[in-house]
Image 1: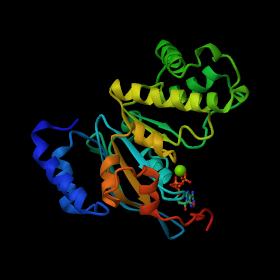
Image 2: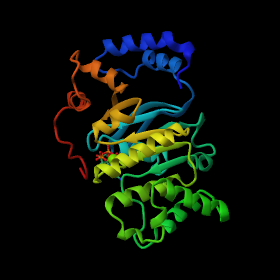
Image 3: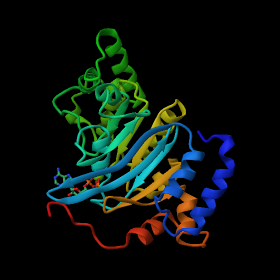
Image 4: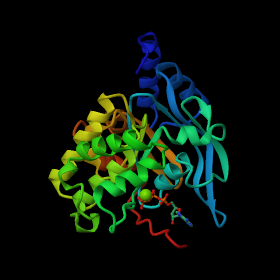
Length: 289
Ligand SMILES: Nc1ncnc2c1ncn2[C@@H]1O[C@H](COP(=O)(O)OP(=O)(O)OP(=O)(O)O)[C@@H](O)[C@H]1O
Ligand SMILES: [Mg+2]
């Protein structure tokens, strides 16, 4: 949470935000943010990923504060999932480093990753396993056993409203139920940092609303959240700070109202208009090129 002693620095930051069309990630900006932020739970330094000599994540600097819900927006192919995958140690960075919970990730990597709950963009569940078997499989990977594991599986399934469907094979689930089960698989070990990569794709408003409420509940209970979505209204509704990424770089960062002020003085601009102003209207068909 923000330190009250840093309120003066917030003024300077707000002025800086108002002056800049796009907030630069320069040393002045980083210095000011550092003063107003609380504990940094996740930090990337010059984080870079190259595939076949194409840079898809480009010297990324991100600092995420304990207790926030941080939104990550960006067109298709911007590098959002690759960034999340590097943070969770699924993809190896080409250069740069990641600090989690105040320590460089290469030290005690296993222990650190245990504190993360990663909800991947692609469903990770197995259709031929029952709901509880899916959650047990993933939760056991974090070292939970016996009664502790049983309890964790029940809690996770209750959390996403699927406890009464625990014995159903997940291939029989609707899209919304599969998305909720995907979340249950990632939260059984009670992580401190939750990373959601487009958790509400292709599901009805009821399921979306349920998931958003659960994310807010987890945050109130102490979890820090990183949230990626293409649904601007979701991001605006739940995120305290938002970064817009394009071509592997963060091109703007701030609260929703700060982002709006960066592009116009108009009061009624939507976050989607801000996004299109900053990233342009060109289609991003980079995949496989
Ligand atoms: N394993 C891979 N091999 C080669 N290129 C890859 C690989 N994974 C991702 N890319 C490329 O890296 C770029 C960034 O992809 P990424 O999935 O991180 O984007 P994204 O911002 O998550 O996009 P989306 O909104 O479509 O999910 C894309 O150009 C993609 O084609
Ligand atoms: Mg993605």
